[in-house]
Length: 396
Ligand code: HEM
Image (cartoon, rainbow, N blue to C red; front, side, top):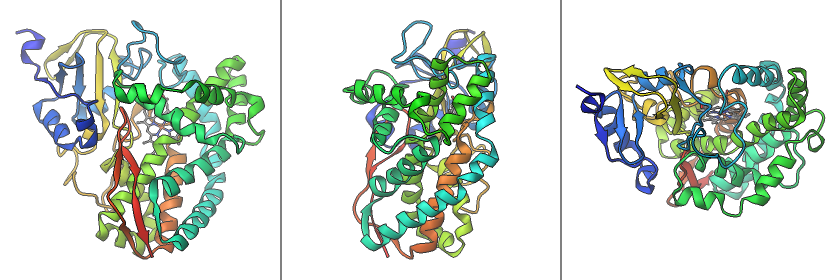
């Protein structure tokens, strides 16, 4: 029997508006179809079960990142921007870049930001409480990271608004050339130029994380242009992800009042609430890999050079791994989810992301008594990210 004779095929389009708007039934269908499924629409292999997603992410020798972690195969097509030295690299290049970054993002450096982030969150939540009604996405989930993250990196105050459209280009750019891809890329030259200019050492304050990356990268022997590309990894991956994580967290709490009450009763659950959000409404839904050799998975042979799509969001709700996966439950041990990836490419900024989540959800829990929707939330579609465009709430 040939490999294609045993593998289930699916005609689902995971980058269609309908799928992205509400992926959970489709995730279930993909998981139930088998450990590996062939997506006819894009001629790629899909993994939606937790065990297989984890196995792919933790085997970078077989499932590489250097051919791109989006649909575009860098060996056949030119990517829209120079590949990341971190995300879109394999060892030994990846190990070297990762080493430079982890030398900077030590637990000690992250701890340095704890007080600043907490204080900024308390002030912001206090102001919003005075207003009573506001849009969680613009006023909280975007406003907070756009303040604390660029401060931490050492960016100047002007132009920070470029970070959001750039993130949209990056995360829509991992998908096919559909309308989301085209819309994100439209008019992007000025945004790209601003980002690249602000990855340079002379644009960054000397005491920020960006300057520390330049210094660590210089010690590793990187040229100035490469050092700037390492800073670009932060500006690409550090804002839209946390914006969606924070927005999704408030959405989950506002729509699960019992969990909101649990958090209010014990604000130290803020960290658990953020972690459970990353599992339950994973801000990063998918990433691709490419097979480097013929590989057998559950009796199916995937030839070398094939694109493989891992559904992180589906894995995080796989009932084969999680009890009551469709319940948002702060008392669960959500650690071990793949919402921050797994293995050598696991999110290098996860400590900073968690700190932002803990600070903001903690401030809400401490200051706000009532949190309820003040209108219908509007979803923001993205080829990679799951999050909201607007989320009107009333607080008291
Ligand atoms: C809730 C927020 C976040 C989520 C859900 C998230 C998710 C992820 C995921 C799933 C990966 C794995 C990529 C892969 O396996 O190909 C990743 C990698 C990465 N993340 Fe995050 N991330 C978040 C916040 C951040 C922040 C704040 C930063 C910067 C400080 C950051 C920087 C990076 C970088 C540079 C990589 C590439 C690491 C590598 O390839 O070695 N992320 N992230």
